[in-house]
Length: 235
Image: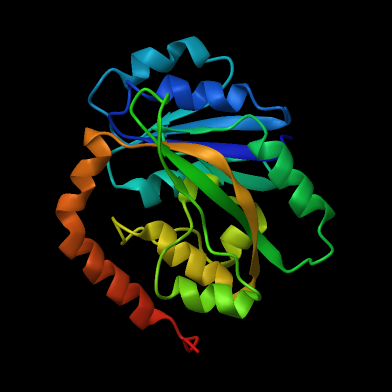
């Protein structure tokens, strides 16, 4: 049984997914499995990843959004720890090793999630456009309250415990946007986070993810609905 399951949801990201998979295969920590969930791609994704068939588990499903794809990956996983990697992002080589050691050796057993800073890079991964540094909080209450104002946790930087994900009923599949934000809040109500103040991920800036900005009004609606549904007071 692998200790870490890396779940890569993808939709028409054939031009990027090899970089994502290779970044996992090149990790300094080797006890992992890779699960690629293809959310109904119509490009050449299936053909491109054939060369990895002995190194990954591949599932193709009808298009239903990233929450559904990630949930399928979680249900198929064997690891104690779960990571999510967007198909256009890459892990830096020591990501899994640092996060596994932190979760395994931490005396606070109420930790459910560890996240980090990340680098926003160009399409070719060779130019840093921005260093996204998360705010360091003095307590979990402070971190949680700030989360209610801004989704500062990047999904590809996260490692979490599989058991905790099932306790909060995984991703809410009714959300086509900000499904990750909803999950971080659910985990934060009952568990704590750990922050690593160094970048462990490169996330691409390119025309396909820029297109998501068109849906800002929809995302704002989801953001407000998620906050409204939370029972824990903000302060």
